[in-house]
Length: 336
Image (tube, rainbow, N blue to C red; front, side, top):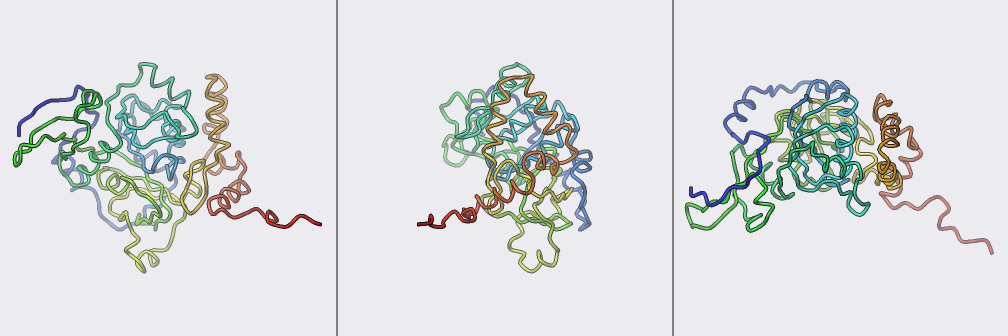
């Protein structure tokens, strides 16, 4: 295959499909109880230096509780896929969890604005960067899920993003057309938040999945956090709803509101006031340290974090907002 041009970026993950397949061959496919605490799951599956991938899309269904636990356990020197990230990236920057980054969408929290602390960290010189696009990282995960070392796409051609990526431009051996080859991405560990799972790891997701199904198949270890644990009999009653099968999963954790303060489709809306609080307090580095200690490091788990930010009353309000349920009495006519 004719190589036309190479990007100058370094690859932070080995795209060798045979090496990945050798790992997957020895991974257990037993249908066994994988239910555990989030503390134990992170301790067992997430290590310093690992390549990390996270599910969700923007502030939608991001595994926020996992991000908090990674900070509490002090993980460092990781590589990370900055793929459709928002608040999850903001959290990981707060703990300086990674120092190698595959860049696509980072720092921005969409219409909410830019994260001052994430911006500071990315400008600090502490992070080695390789540039991509969201579609590039989706394609790389697709290659990983397929068990091949690369996948050809038409993206990036003629851009500076290609120049600073780890991609290769090549000619198709069949047609002579020019394509860009995306190296496969096989994360050491990934975390995905889902609506429902059984104790074995069979998962259901409602709404958009983006690249989560490929992420689950490409990752060597997978932590699932679920809004609720359901009986396997329910999984078997309608198996077509199972989008992540048990044999891909290493740990299952029941974490209600595990995407808070982000949005969980058909469950609860995002806590916009709290997300704005993050952005405000980040402007002062010292105040942000106090904020992190109060909201993450001093919390034993995600439920304590939620309790500090309004508890069940807040979650009920966010659920009403997700379903656009009017407040009691809101539509009553004023007395004449």
